[in-house]
Figure 1 (tube, one colour):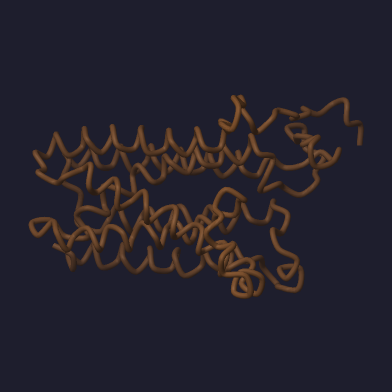
Figure 2 (spheres, one colour):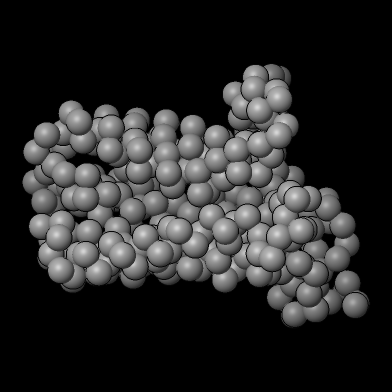
Length: 263
């Protein structure tokens, strides 16, 4: 391979440091996810004259996302280490978040929120929240790109990228593939929401989100390097194993939504 023909990515994950304060691109992308998501949900709820306390819902989702993603990483990818060193689970700043765990955390957070939002069902809320969650996937994967993590396998494709902080092999920019896939899913879901005049069939957007996001994740995992050594002995990697039940659940929810089971 002629490495001169490929893009070399050597950006620092740090935006700036000022004394003990360090601003990182990943943290910025994480913050943008919530700011943009909040703005879009506010517009959606305004269009529907919803009386939901969006600020409270946002706090539930934020806590659920971080807690779920962290626990997902610890239990799905490195359970032996973290169960032997439980105090390390709380050290989120050391890195290690899993999107599948984040998805579970968001769903649990919304379910808990509905206990106080008596006039709104879990399905009504989640149908709208998943739209901005799909968009959030774009920002999070952009943060992974700045961190040179979730690397793809070596390839000689013309758009391969060399992540020089890791090695000098041209690789699939798998995190960008994934981010673009999530952006496309966001556009599809949001357009469907608008086309149905702010009143989608209950459960349909939720089902489509689960099926499309985790099917895309399953396929794109074929371009990625494994994240934990134990995955080398598996026929498919952990990301694919975890994506399968989500995608299947999406198919079931789409079927039930078509039958009007959530109305």
